[in-house]
Every structure is written in structure tokens, then in C-alpha cells.
Image (cartoon, rainbow, N blue to C red; front, side):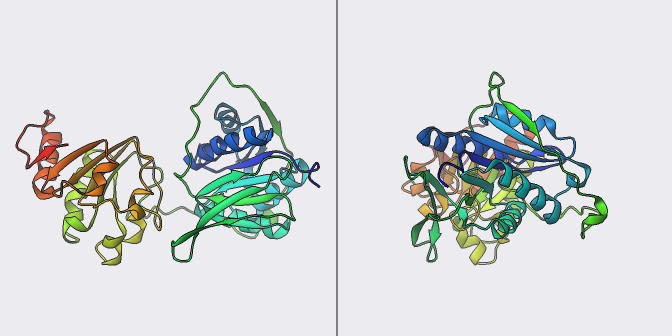
Length: 343
């Protein structure tokens, strides 16, 4: 069995022909794991008119991309996606399968693991492999109310499967010089064979997509109450971003849990993360330290958040944030006297 199953396969999640960032993040991590055991990296791309994503998977680190392109796969539905995924896995026989821990990824992973059958470690935050000859996937995730990390192994069955949180791993740089195989996989399911139909998509205006956001303005207990988030939203809107929050704010009902960043919330990797009134507890910082630039605003000069921030402003956020908003609206450089000192 050890020789029968080889390689690491990553499911490329997409919507309307646009890949979710977690797909490239997992291909990057798969590449790192593959180099430790001398394996190849495969990408599984499903959808309709998505051949360009198969090529993108090569650019982001895959050696081979398996393309299942069919009209019934235009929108995600459990039945056609799980059937086609199972067909590819049974044909290719990867030793490891990685899927993003998104709403669709969790749905697909559970469906296919049941039918293979094999084990599935859900919502992992660390992935590693034992060296040859065991080649066991070391899938780790928080356990016992986040008090410890549990590493789970699937010793008896293949493929070894795991879903991983978006934002945890770093994608490799896109490299158009990379070459690889794109293999089309036939799929002949008919629309009338599928029990569910997609009639229409409704956009939830209150829903926030933290994982894909390029700018996040996050508030902590230091903003004092729910009214503070209205000010942070104004700043986020000006920057083309979204609002995040620390766990205490969610627990106190100041904002919905969909905004929570941290170990028990979302792990994010925006280009800019502005932490306002956030002390910097490990539970929160573990979810945002992958940000390209972190700016901290806190009146406590000894707040731990300054240890992970690239730029810090010591001052009252009620003076600093309105000044930032004013400067951005005016299109002018910031001036001294905004209520704090830069660190």
C-alpha cells in the first residue's frame, strides 16, 4: 500500500473562475512537505471553463494539475463535486489530500472521506510529514478548548486527509517559468442526475470575508464598546478593507463572531492590519502575525501588540483614528499632534 499511494493532492477551490487564496497557500505547503519525502504535488481543479486555474496551479507550485471541466460543476454542489473528486482520487491514488477548511472545503472533505473510506483531520493549523519510510502526515489542530495542540495520524488508511484553515500557510511566489502537466479528466454526469439545483445567489451585506481581505481594521477591548466599531468601519471603508475584532469584543456582544480574528476565529494574511485597542494576547496575534504590515494603536506603551507590530502609535484611539480618517479624506500626509507618538 505504501508504494501504491504517492504524491500530495490539493483541491483548488474556486468561484466564478477565481481561486480562493487558501488553494495557493496549501499548494505552497504541499510543496514544502513534498520536498521532505521526495513526492510530487498534484492540484485538482473543478468547475466550468476553468482551465486557466489549472495553469495557475502549476505557477504556484504544482507538478501536475488534474482538470475536471464540465457545465454541472459551474457552481459548487456536494454531489457532482464529490463524485468527480472521488473518481480522480481513486485514479491518481495520492498519499495525502489537502483541502481548505472553508464552508465548501469542509463539506467536500467530509463527503469524500466517508466514501473512500479514510480518516480526516479537520481544521488543522499545522501540517508536517514524517520522513521516509513512514511518510505519515502530522496534522495538528487545537484541542480541549484551545488549551493544547493535538497531532493526529492516519496510520492504516490512504489517502491521509486534512482540511487546513485559510491564512495559516504562505503561498509560494507565482512563477510563470514553472512548467507542468495539465491532465483533463472525463466526467459525464448529467444535470438531471443531480438532486440539488442552484437557483440564485444572495449576497449577505453584513457578511465579512476576513480571509480574502487585503486590509483589516480590527478593534479590541480598548475601544470601549460597540459604538467604537462604527468609527473603525469608516476607516476600513476608506482603505477598501473590512472590520475585524478580538475575542473579548465578540464575547461581550459588541460585534458578530464572523469578524473575530485569532486562534478561535479566523487566521488572516492581509497586506495591512491595523490593530486598534488590542492588547496583543497570543490568542489573537496567532491569527494575524502573517500580515504584511501591522500597525498597532494603543495607549499603553507596554502593550504586547507592539512586539508584533511593524509600526506603533501610542495614544488614545479616539484621537488617532479620527485623525487618520481626516488625513485620508483630505489626501494629505499625516501631521504631528494626532494624539500619540510613533514607536
